[in-house]
Length: 358
Image (tube, rainbow, N blue to C red; front, side):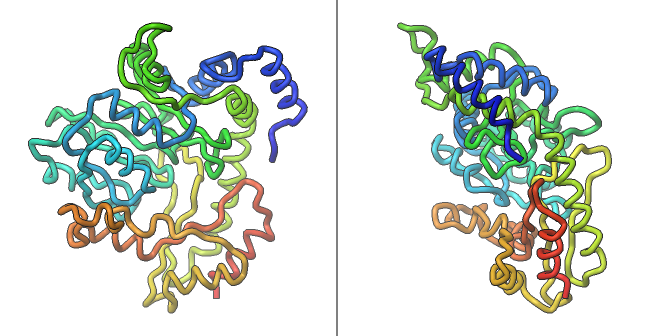
């Protein structure tokens, strides 16, 4: 499903005639306003990708020392810490969701801990109240990597309101995309102003710089594309949900295959569809199934594998010891995310399932 090309051409012509294609112009402002309304959040700042808002969030809150985070995520989560000179401290995850386990956080806090950076894995909300309670007890900031959580709500309220800041990815693989792009959600106008300065080299005006910022602004072209895509996202989510239901129905009785269900009271966006393979019960390892799928031109993803904590740059950390992360290591060794897209046909879905159901 493509955005309306006639409307896109009209927007592109308008952008060209304005002769101002970046630096917080008309379509950038329109998209920020439209996303605030759609996501039910008070303030949002657009970025050129999903990694830069993570890096900028840490700068904006003056985070230093150590930050407690999850090893079960895309590497951008931990890279953002490393680029800010912050030591990541990994804790294990909840076996039911893959999200950071709040019961493991408190024992990882030291005198150098300044923040917690959880991840809403596959768009399933973290246990935000428990995390916030711990943060309040120890005076810590909370920054959510919500790259997968576009449109996700708990009890009718956006999960993006949790914590001090939340960041989003609008990469082409996401349920909502601006081709490349991202955003940060904040609670007040003063924080938004600071973030907007930081993403534009720190410029306050033509002659003043308020902080050492970077260049991470979204341009007018992708903002226009994002406005058009926003019209389609509800339909895309509904069609993804239908795909997820088909997967679940046929896999429900397959020995050794586990699927994660919807969480009651949560509006999911069906960004991903992970399954876990029990080699003993299924009769085939996860990797063997992955290769079988590839041989039939069905491209699943072992997502997230390997764990971030197992990469050479991080595995020397004390918290990266596999003994400390048994659940995360177990999930990473058994997970495959099945193809998930709103344009998958019934035949496509059946072809995926035929590879799995023996």
